[in-house]
Image (cartoon, helix red, strand yellow):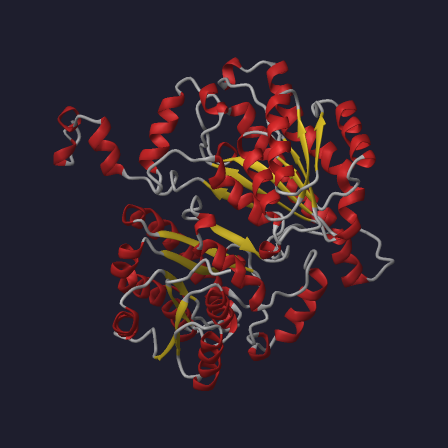
Length: 269
Length: 273
């Protein structure tokens, strides 16, 4: 399939996790891909090599998107190399797990800087090129924006802001022919669990709890992002599509009680 | 091909959005069981078209509003292709009317077709869907998420159907069966002229939406078929809204410009008149 032939995609945070999977997937479907990353040069080089192996052009740009000129410099590099942009996927992010009573202002600000401000500024800088190409923006949100996951407050609140930003971007940029949507992910096995103090417990919970399918791999999310960037989804605007493998689908009282209290739990008031 | 070796059962599959869904499934390799109520001519045309692509096509005439109709359908399934990998719950019916004028019979007719029938149909299809872990995709309406004029019987019954689909996803995930809905904005089908002023719906959709045109069955079918595909395998129990952006944002300026004589309200000065 080469439904993105002749198109250029920019994936921020493209050196690892969901970003890397999206970059590779878009390349296999015909897009030339620019990835931005902060400091993981070797990982970025591996993604670039995969994009080129798919027969597409690749560019990697190192930089900090939370720095004042970060987003503008990135889009300048895209314009200089390719002269166009069709698909923007701001995937850069880093979840720091902290309970609210331990939450410090720096952790909080770091989260809003990368998950919200950097997305806004990257999209703003990309707007002129996206307008020329009738482009598409696919944001990466999280079901943690509306459901509370242990220690996820700083990201969840920022992603709730992102869901609202989605509405505003989608409605303001409709007139420019730019289509904006989001994928709202459950927990994804993007290497992040290993850096969380509670990562092991989260993995165990998700492996048992998830309805239907196990914990998400970045490769499970990439085809959904690609769909929202493709003409097949032309009638979908301003939507956030929940892709969580069923984690937030329902409450299985019985399973929960059995796991917490064993098979023979009985109710006494 | 993506759906080669799979069999799809599509209710209301011979016209409108259902026909476009059937066409895409056929083009991408699926054999089809097309369920229709009475329009034999369209059914025959669809059968001929998909057989020309090399697909097996079984036409089944059934009235799914009655439990007996659903039973009869699955007798024919068992005697026919005897396989269901993809179930598309698309047949719909509704009586237009405002809440105040809505009678019990009209209400029930809408709920029978839009909620009871999908429940009975999916239940009856379960033994086949369980064999290899199938997929269920239901077509719904934006009118389940927001109110349209005279649309309460259809909108509210489709909202119930979307919740039914969520429960099917929840309960049948253990069989590897994935269930989702697509909620369509206004689309050019014969149902548009059930509205008091069908042209108003067309003009609104073309003017407010991203596409600058009325929605077409293919716009929705592409989403529905994607939900039937492996590409969406991480999406469980969701309703995907596809409405061309007509509900995106509230543009005061635009609305004021068209509807309000500002001098009448003295709003230019921002004061009260």
